[in-house]
Image (cartoon, rainbow, N blue to C red; front, side, top):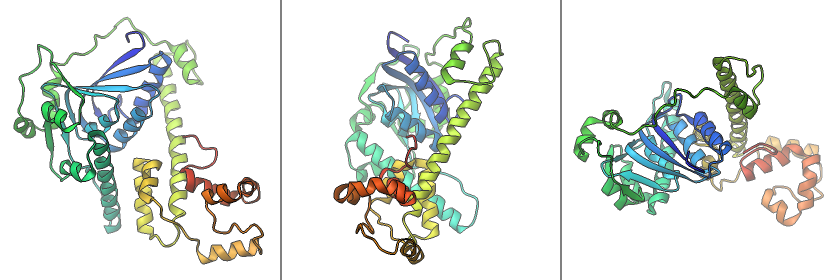
Length: 360
């Protein structure tokens, strides 16, 4: 790392043990601890797991410091989507980007297949939006890259389309240039391997050893000390990451379930299952944008129970949402947290996409 600018080499598949959602978040956390104020990722990737890619994209977008990406070979499939969140995107003159629709597999009955199809359609719609945001074009235009075919785009066309910000020279020992037709025939992985053989990579520091005490202190690891083996510290770190991931997943699932169930009985169980699948794969924010302004209504049994519990509504707040309370009677909203915590939690979750007190 030079001064406060970090350079990271990522030549990998999205979902590898070293390049997945949690691992990338740990990388950013480590760079923060080292004092980085910006980072450059030298990127060479032929795609991978959509869910990990989505988490990596969110991490790039929400990074405490700006992240630039230099495509040093190929950036294909999910890699081409997550790169869109970078501050600046550069590409070598003989590099390629490949964009296509998301794909997946399903095993089950008709409802399961319909739910998977709904999920893939939602992903495709989000991809079109992300591409449009980067290129400053509408989703109708970017849909041309999401028609079911693999679209290989060379450096010149990437610049013309607004997918990248600049083209940079290649190294003197770079492989012979390929045409778009040639890379389409070879496929993403073959093109990845062709570039990888000649790419610059950081020289390993064989003298470097794990700073176990620093790692233990940084992540508050328990059950290990500076005298523990590297393997024991690594195992403790993996367990720590898993606990954080599991906790975050549980909290997100609770928020997603609450948001979907709040839609009420006018939404079918199949549709609710699709909404939950979208939320759990693409995140709470995406689910909230998909649900939009759908206004839930209460089932008659819930209305009767509420009426029996509260025979008279002296406040005149029946049916109010969070914004209505804030505008008309904020004191009643504050009181609601103590007098009717279930309703308060429901209103809070519908407004902010998370339960009260939950971490982002």
